[in-house]
Length: 62
Ligand SMILES: [Zn+2]
Image 1 (cartoon, rainbow, N blue to C red):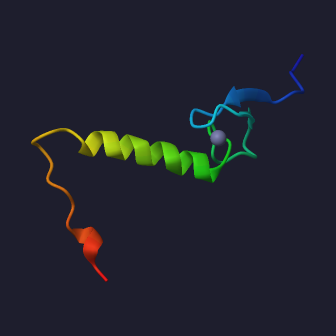
Image 2 (image 1 turned 180 degrees about the horizontal axis):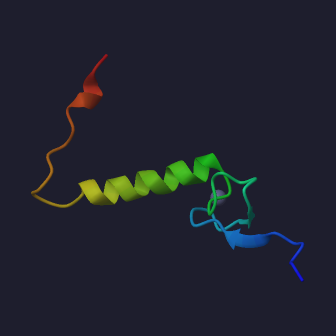
């Protein structure tokens, strides 16, 4: 017997339940937005290592 109901996973960013299926390219997140938020937080953590990585200067380009 197979399970007809898609498995639900809680979005790591907002906690909302979303189906874990190929219809959801952002899984385990509920949306692209939440995925971006989480990745952003992750990058911020990485770059906050003190005394190792200087701030990126490329962002000031017009
Ligand atoms: Zn979410």
